[in-house]
Image 1 (tube, helix red, strand yellow):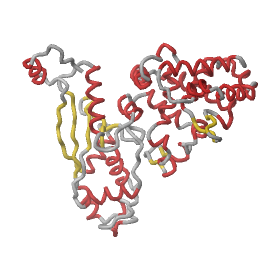
Image 2 (tube, rainbow, N blue to C red):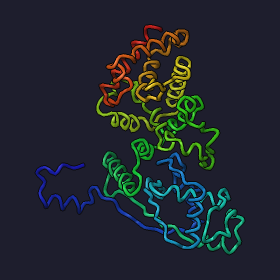
Image 3 (spheres, one colour):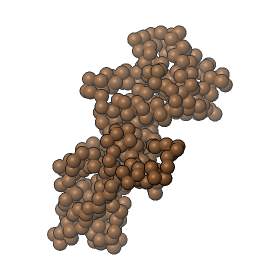
Length: 379
């Protein structure tokens, strides 16, 4: 964050003494019933699978974790970030905490245990009282992180982002959208998750419908949805985000990652009326796209097969957004539009721009312009 140009050793030492770019750590141990209370009181927040990532534990892994607690085997600590006085954001450990809550609320039936196989088939409520009391005495450690002497929001955001990234270098790192989802929770992020779970969106992208495979009240995700590649790593949410971030051509500058990051940062706290406007706009454009392109929506021919294309999604959705007032004519001319797009894709240079790998601001603008000009002829 701070340039080292012309900075003397003494100045560097002073920066260190002042705690610049440094976080404090406090370690606390909590009894398992206390964990339940802290979550219920919303002092520990953001525990649901849509937070951070969706690499969901199956019941076997959850059961083995409960067994480890029962046997008093050391388990990794969770990491909390104090976002306000005595209120904490879970930065790492949400699967462990969710498992504890699920078991104590009798929503997890133990399975696949070897050492304690006699408990297979039991929930917490069906365990003998002495087993329950034994678990109630178990503790889980929490490392609480708080940036020292950082009043600048930009620097605080940098520290928070760095902590997220470093915490995940030991396992599977967070991808860009998982990191955005962690850092910019709020109304916009919730909207991305909602729209990515819409039945039409899921049908178009081959995702098992959220409403059939996901229980929002307790965060349960079944195996079919958990295994979907777009859902699993939040690519579905990133696809939705791309539409919003690319709508305004003045925002399309710099790297695509920065465009998406900046949009989420600037709009994460939109008011309900603004969120509703975005919801309506996305839904309308998606409906038009589906009506025009039918089963080939956002798909392109590749070696005789139809493949999904996120760049084509960008181009089609933003182009439709600019021509949404001509919905009836676009749908009426859908056959001609499909033929015209296929003809354009036969041109190698156009195919490379619309479908190929270029992921620069220039390429994004170019592919949107190509599809916009094509649709405009039929609107």
